Amino acid sequence: ETEVSINLAPGWRGRGLALAFLTAALARVEGDVWAVIRTGNAASLRLFERAGFVLAGEHDGVCRYVRSSSS
Image (tube, rainbow, N blue to C red; front, top):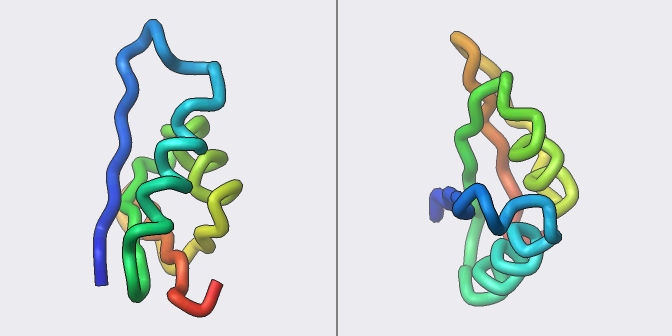
């Protein structure tokens, strides 16, 4: 299992780079990949859903997403 996090400098956001970087990183990882995202972080929620992550659970304002190695 691997946990992933991504953060771009504000001036680089909104250009589609996060998905490109995340996709490149995922290509190098074997097994399930997890991401923990605050429920209020709509941009990150959309990003990880676009990258094939699915909601595995939510607790206390935090979502836990997983991308299965079979994806």
